[in-house]
Structures are given as C-alpha cells and as structure tokens.
Image (cartoon, rainbow, N blue to C red):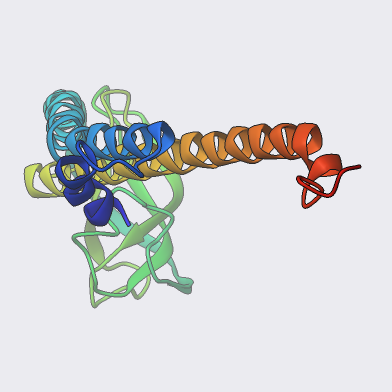
Length: 205
C-alpha cells in the first residue's frame, strides 16, 4: 500500500479527479518510508553503539573484580542446572553445569563454604575445582566475555531499529485511518445537506 501511494504522488499531481486527501495520504506514506529507511537504521546503530560501550565497561569491571579461585568439593552434585542461574554465561556456555557445595579461601585467608556451580567433570567430595569469586571472596558468576557483549549490543541495536520502524508504520496507519474518518464525516455532512432533495430536481415539488 505504501509503495502504491508513493508511486501515485506523481500520477495524482495533475489528475483532475485526485482528492486532496489522496495527496495527503501519499505524502504521509513517503514520510513514513523515509523515516523507516533513514531514521530507524541510525537509531538502531546509535542504540547498539551505546549498548556496546556500556557492556564493554561492564566486561572490564567484571574481569577486574572477579577471579578464578581454587576450591574443594565438600558435597557431591545437588542436581544439574542447565544454565546454573548464570544468565550472563548462558549465551557462551552450552555445557551442563552442576551445583556442588565447596570450600575455598577468600583473599584475606578466611575460609568460605557455599553452593557453587561448576562445569568440572569430577565433582566427587574432595575433588579440586576452580570457581569465580569477587574481591571479597564471595562466590560470583563468571564475568561476561567480549563476544557476548557484542552479541547483546547487536541484538539491542537490531531491536531498536525494528521497533522504530514498527512504530513509524503504526503511526502512519493511525494517521491514514484518522484522515479516512474525517473524509467519511465530511461526506456524511455533505449528504445530510443534499440528501433530502436528491432525485427531486425538475419534479416541480
């Protein structure tokens, strides 16, 4: 419909039966198309760029604040977890992770114990594993990697571009619908004025 309206702009300019509302609808369609082709991609690129910058800062901060720490399994697997409650690593880790109770030491030497997730194949009591901890020695999730950050940023940019295009098309449809409603209102008003005398011309009444 949009393409037909755009092609009709030139054809309707000198068409004696072209209504003013037809030209308005065509210009609305042209404006919407330009917004979808020019503004939506720019908005998507800007959103993706800003998201990528923010996520890269997050990646740097997480890698500075989280550390691989040796631990020892105290209690076996308490049950498999597909993503081990770690949405940040879900994109890059497709292997099955397991929850275990383990002992480890904080940077100040304090003994710690807690439930952690691991991808290690040996999870029997006494097995050595490596877990991620923060600067205080508390168990933490694996830091996000750069490729995951880029993927999230690209998806955010694509989503913003599609959303902008969708909102533009929605706005175009609303405007055209409103224009049609006003056209029908004018027609009803005109018909109300001439309707009672329709077909009575020349009858002598």
